[in-house]
Length: 48
Image 1: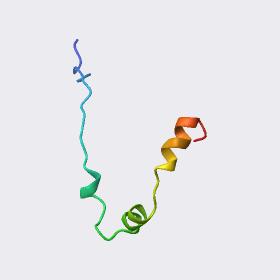
Image 2 (image 1 turned 90 degrees about the horizontal axis):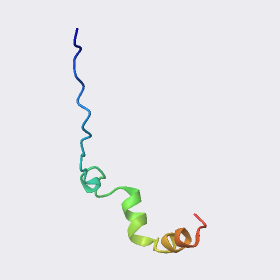
Image 3 (image 1 turned 180 degrees about the vertical axis):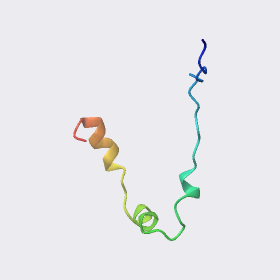
Image 4 (image 1 turned 120 degrees about the vertical axis):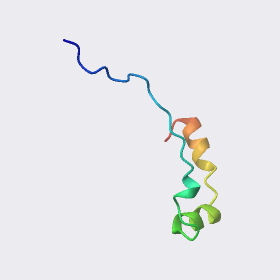
């Protein structure tokens, strides 16, 4: 007796977050006002 074969292939879905976050959202305003480039340096140094 053979059961239903499952699809083992993984599928990728690309999502554009710009489409999901409203233009006037508070986080967009914060992102425009604050320079978060320091975060990448901290990650490089192993602190985050």
